[in-house]
Length: 73
Image (cartoon, rainbow, N blue to C red; front, side, top):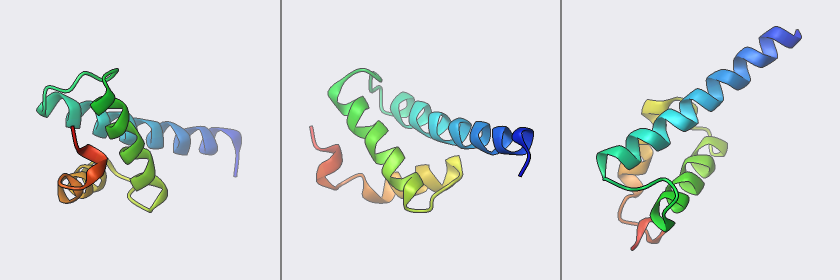
């Protein structure tokens, strides 16, 4: 794989991760640097490594997991 192809994949991944996190937090009025925001960031990363690679997939999975302890106040 060429350097530019690798960079494109990484950029797309970062865009999906950050977009999901920003959307999730904005919809719930969660500050990114709060404890809840940090937990949400961890969940986004965990979901990405579990195979959820698009913003929509990540947001859908986070909505499904919302009741779990990971998001408890």
